[in-house]
Length: 425
Image (tube, rainbow, N blue to C red; front, side, top):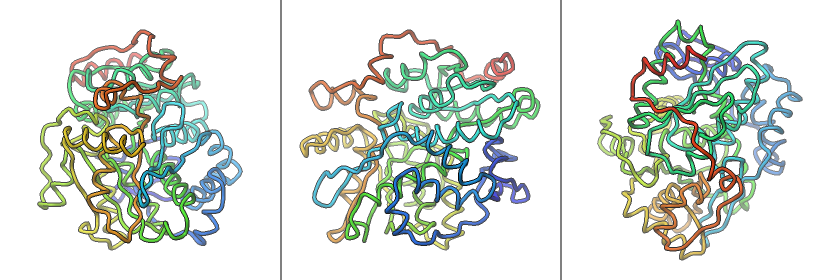
């Protein structure tokens, strides 16, 4: 697999290099040089998740990994289901929260961990990542106790849910968590600064497990195929997919699935009040505002990292951005959507509720809708219970960590302090 740096096309790498390096020169994202449609989508949709995902990833990655090795990696990474649940006659939910940390990022985090374990040899690696909630847990658990790998996770202090925090800030060992006095964008900026620091990169073997890492995105392509495999042939026709969007990795993966031939009619990018992309699509100017804290905190991102990949893909495919649906919900509208879903008999959480609301606004009579549920409602226990006015079930994955002490350090948004921490590891 050949990939190029979107900011500097002269930098070209293979899949192994892209996974180990994370970012390219000038903080550029790596992007596939060729995207060839898959043959016989119908046959793929009849396979099970692991076998189908092996075929898809082998098609993309090529001969850098044998199909046998890739099948082993996928088998270890994808050990849980992604069921499609009916919500109304023409709208379904894709549940991506059945992994060990109850969020869609288990797919990408676990696949990346297995790829790095295959590629790294005896090299020591330091994973540095920023999280607005779910990435931290997925990455921490995927890499926990892996030999010669240290993980440092930056997150905005007080801006993720308490149970999200407990899920990844109570592990210790090779997992170091840092509560930053600032926003997710501050955390993400410091990750980018670290990758621009050549001395630091070399000294600690720096890598990132954000969705900027191409392995994360490739893994996420697979659950779009899994969703369509569970729909009837009639439902697949005129399918509209609504994606709750923060850093825009999830939507990027869906668009890549479409470019591989998956028959998705169109996508909707659904955001909260951090609506840089909807305003850009509406007005044509890129004007990020200061990040606002919302009840859908995993989407509290005003400068989404993956947007350049989406623009690159639209350019390559000859698609028009006018074909991409979009919309924004404030907290009051999000609460109303969550209550509407609950009245329909479907328990959701704020991110999925935003995707559902935009889907109902934009879905036409002859279309089938699918919205992504990216995290278990219990990860947002306090806000969901407050909105619904009742207690919700807490899965064992969360309950077992709820009373453990937080092990996080607390830093101001100061790159020098983060750099010193990385060097000390």
